[in-house]
Amino acid sequence: MPTEKLPEILGYRRLGGRVGIRNHVAIVYTTNCTEVVARKLYDRFPVGTQLFGYPEGCSYRDAPVEKIVAMAQHASYAAVLVVGLGCEGTDAGDLARRIGESGQTVESITIQSEGGDLRTVERGSRILASLLQHASVADRAPVPVSELVVGAECGGSDATSGLVANPLVGRVADRLIDEGGTYMHAEPHELMGCAGVLAARAVDENVARDVRAAIEEAERESFESGLFHIGFGNIEGGLTTIEEKSYGCLPRQVGIPATARGFARVRAAADGRLLSADRAVRVEDLLRRLGGRLAIRRLRRSSRLLHDRLRGDNRGTPSGDQGDGESGPDGPDPGQRRLRRNTDHAWRADPRGDGRRSLRGDDRRRGGEADEIRDLPPFRGVAAANAKAYAVSRKSITFSVTTRSIRSHARPEYAAVCAVIVTLSRRWNG
Amino acid sequence: MSKERDGSNRTAILLREGDNVVTLLKDLSEGDLAVTGAADATVDVRLREDVRFGHKVAVRPIGEDEDVIKYGMPIGQALSDIEPGTWVHVHNCRSTRYGFRQEKYGVHA
Image 1 (cartoon, rainbow over the protein chains, first blue to last red):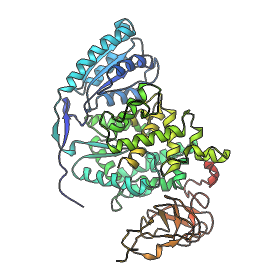
Image 2: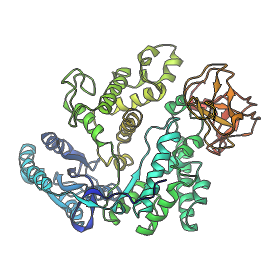
Image 3: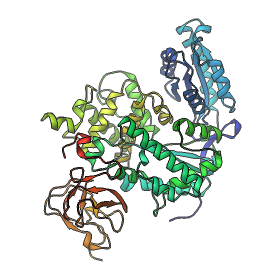
Image 4: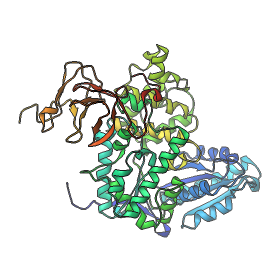
């Protein structure tokens, strides 16, 4: 193992001591009534913006709002525009004020004050333009990796996840922690069966108790709902049991999962439990308490590419191979071409988007129609299963670093899409 | 070190010494040798049936109700006696803790 210090990376230092490695502007809607207008703004400024918000109507609920605030405070956003209606429980001005407490640059606008959708789009566009300008002058500076909080999220387990990808993630996490950074492991559901192993490696009894409690709760939920985190694709790919999948999810390095150490550090830093009743909120809450410092993942380029294609129109395949040439926002590199090609495979396996023709298990039971997926690349079962997840959600995706956070309270399909992207990228993007 | 042992022709991986299954790195057919490149050459096993990439093959006899070990961890229990070289999956292995059988998945493997 190399032991030299990790180099500093380039990041953005924001007000309030937050450090991010992206430089976007967030568009946040406060109710699903304003999502349409927020989306229009988003469509007018497709580069450098991300869209998310409160997924329900007039109501106000603490958990999702806290999550939105934490996300918007994230240092990877240079600025935030809150779009409200004017009569909803989740007040735009209040939301903006809370977001601004971190030092975040934030503006708000409400449809009723502006006098309608069109006026809101007009004024919102002007605000967005200035926020983007504000972002554009932010300088990247070297920051030590100890400033980072990196979250790991699952993405389409197959037999190779436990062989290659997760051990690699584990090593990276170990290095990060050794240098004073923070690593978070999300989704206790993915650790079912690992409670004993993980708890035994915790740094103290409190951490061990937290780990056990989190995983036991996930088990309880699963037994109550009858839903377990193993699917056709997993089984086709060679995974037999929950335990097998879970052990594969443990990032490992010489037998010491980074997770227990990660738990410990997060706990020490935030003085709270990483995983508890409202897990996702807790994670976001921790991020917020830690100063909103950044997590996350490196796949945005690919997802952005897909996203742009999908958002554009309904013609052609998801990656647009009947449309305009090969160049995406980042140019035609081989990895992206592979990703796009394979995404198209998935699309063709399930062009109607109802998912039924994409599952090999279904095909087999109905005794036919398997031709559709025969030309898929290796790991056919997994690719086909993911095609379903992809198709289901193709109308309403918002890729961003916040995918994981959105997942738990509103739209599991976001996470499913993310899983597809991660899987495809992990497999073919090298 | 012979070619068989240096890993250059490996077709399977033993995740932890002592595991009683290996994971195939390519599709193999009945009669093929699953070569792990592990120090212990005795885990190399000749397949008794076709097994696909990513799936598991027993490398030692596993008795009914005995643990199936991968990653050095018990991933489930054998539903029947499993001979070396046999495919191990939902038809002959189930979760110890969660008690699933293959019908639960709707998979007829």
